Image (tube, rainbow, N blue to C red; front, top):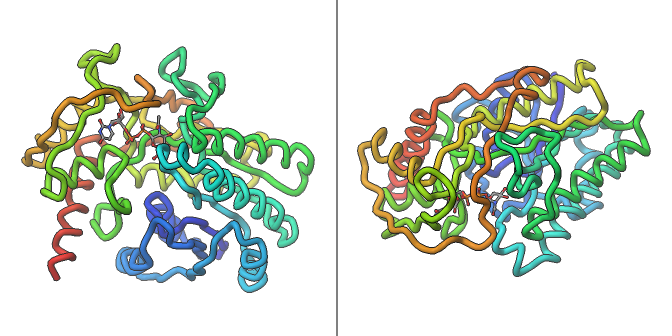
Length: 344
Ligand code: UD1
């Protein structure tokens, strides 16, 4: 059984990926400092898969702790590195926290990999690297735009650090960089899902929390954009579809299928939906109201972006298959399950 280290494995995308890895027969070690997740996620993973992955409460910024962890789990073959801070607004206020968390952890892992003869590396990047693309849908060779936030910059710099490291040591590493569009939804079992700390920044958790009454009203940030209904457009992808791409990426490197020792793929559906379309669909498929009001634009928001996933479809051999209706249903089922749990 091949062993995979998943940093940030109790987080939103991480936990869904751990489930898909276990389903495919991988043995998983999770490293997470629980800064934006809860250890109970392990129960959810165990309920779904019947297996409780090894868990180490470690901060990837701590080189010595990471090294000790790798001494203990000395047969890891691949690493999927999710652990990072991701709140755009917070990153503007605390840039050094973001540069330290997101870049020192990456450097530590890249430094430790050859020491422990680990070659395969999957990196969580973001469509934020494209800024507002000139051409839509956006392909992987679209120009990288100046980052609008320290968070976005950490993703750009992270990609460069990986590229430079592999260029200098091509025999020691291979990497798949995955640029995510907007992951939403939850596992079909409703045992795991997105659970942001405090007031959500992202759209879907705010929608579900408003629908259930935790928040009074959703604010729609702007209806005066150059889009059909004036609200921003994104490529919303089911988190389980996204998770599956990580399994494919690991298998690709393990079985020597990569065309180059660093490959980059867009993970999106190819379908752009506006904020208002998301709200309307959510209300329709779940038969629930989402009170909202239109407010001013949010600083730093991109007007419209959606993926051209052709390269991932044809070369990686992965495709997003879930409908947006099913995705929105799963997000609501998760919120309902959370509410049920909090009453117990
Ligand atoms: C943001 C980041 C992206 C990052 C991702 C991870 C920017 C420009 N992008 O994505 O780099 O990878 O978060 O957290 O900051 N919206 C509302 N009301 C809300 C919340 C959101 O109208 O209460 C709208 C936003 O204006 C946007 C859309 O919903 O048009 C999606 O927002 P969000 O979920 O925050 O994702 P991004 O901004 O696309």
